[in-house]
Image (cartoon, rainbow, N blue to C red; front, side, top):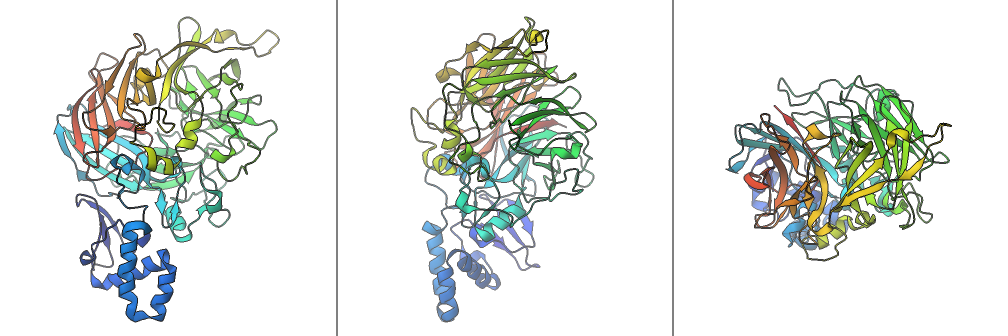
Length: 608
């Protein structure tokens, strides 16, 4: 609940266990107050203002009555608050189904708090885990339609000497304020309601090579992290230094957000054009590929060109951008990740094609996707990181995917690509926030909202001879080396020991589904040599998130380390940070959080 004091109008939000959450000199937006409200906790000096603002925002007809009949104001106010506690503010009412708690708004904790640790965290686990998620999907009378469209929040867990501290920070407050006040979303989204979109009324400035300074929090950048982004200056709080020089958040678009790696305070919004790459603005992916010296590799999709253009570009270790290749023979598609070996970057154009004739492209991504075509082939393009240019092209049967597990150049002259493959892109529609709030946690043998794909290995054979003597690119089949059975080997949000990324490896980790309908209920370890799996699933129901691998600095084996996963403990109705031995997939410790953290996507670890 929120508690108020009389010291200069300050207030602080308190989480589920009374932890100090936030200090602000602004008045609270009443549409976001968690319910029920304990009236006795609010000083009388604020009561009239609080209730009047709530009524004017949520019940305008009551506001008019209160003006005509002021003597009945407090009675109507009490009625309004009662309505809100039941049907009027469903956005913030705790759902009966605890599995869906992570898809509702939760408190922000700006001041670091110590978490209660059960078990023993190894002393060598010393550093910070950053996690991205949504603060909420609701703002005033507006609800984001899709899981991917939440209002961003970032989390930081600091681990040292077996202890864990935690804080969080919202990163899209200016955007959320506008949406709360208008009930409309300013611009495009992934799956938003076009009737609730407004264009031109709210402008965001990005530092982009023309504009020298970008806004701070007028966009929501929610997906993944880039650490030590080349060319950015250090910017941290006070004299304390985090594990990174810079910390940048990404999304599926040409929008990046620099964060303070210590306080998580949003610093600036910018685009890839700041690298001086001569490239037309367009769609890009949240997971760029990386090079040995800190280089970044991504694509920019220009859908205005005919035919559409994928410009594959590099940002070098000095922060300068250049185009490596331009691809014009592939359909324009929603592609979430780039793939990378030591010497090559691979663009996989799976099926999620833009251009549905009945949609209006500027509304959102989801409504602009064409219907599934079982005959549409998947395309693989191999680009040389050093020399540039497409050096090989492959095709396979159609599928959809989000992420790379790993890719590497094998000794037999092929490029190996591991990924979680989905039969169709139906998950994109199933991940609407209404569906997740309704169906997660209910057994369903064919649940389309389950976040898991099939572990599949492709081989791109003889990639070194992909061009004929006359310069013509040869199109060859991408061979499926093996695929695990979905029931025992499904995986998503994959991670591995980062020392083996882009190289031959053995072990992969990710979220897993044992009981269909629960979105994610366990973690999996895949042995790519034996093709056996090992599962972590606690005795009581949990919804775990992406497992981040932390390597033992003294370790000699690939799987010598721990996994860190932020999970929702459905019985406690609170989130926990779970520490799992990566060798045997046994839990060794957990740090209990005083609240539920929104269910998000990705994280990154930095050693102290």
